[in-house]
Length: 243
Image (cartoon, rainbow, N blue to C red; front, side, top):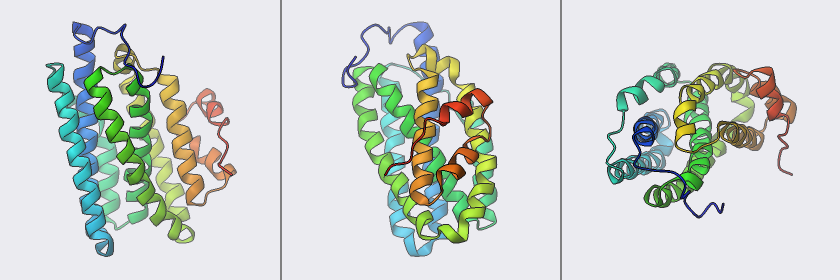
């Protein structure tokens, strides 16, 4: 099936689909809200980049509104309570880092982990989405690459000073991401997504980002092992950094 064509075999209005979609739609709406809040907090930590970070945050708020429209299109009410609970640990990790002025950790959470998670999820959702949601998601994912690049650029510039902090933050953040993936596995399956494909793309996106910042392949493979089972860690061994 072409990535540009929606899956015609899915009943987007079945009770099972709408139930699963209520949680997934809530997750993407809350994820964009979290991103908005995080970029505004980063703007406080980096006043020299305040304007650019606020602009990125406003983009995330527009994404939220776009995904809210996806729910309305299917007459689904997003389950935001579930979504807020899903993001609770990641939100706490970001808030604690921001309070301690650990800017690199904040960037790892928002500009790497969350953005790579979003890119992987959106790319895997597009082929199975309804027509309206597919068009929305294609537009949103293009923006997420820009957000990822902003964080990469800052972290690369300060890499030698923040390398140890990033490695420490990764030990906390990656298991949280993995837990989040596991909690939405059944719902992503119902709406037609493949968990293994989502895992693989996230790991490749995250690994590529770490490589562009300055981490070696050995560093990346070691860092990727946090929160992963041995089998899933082996899947990441397929990763090859760009030349």
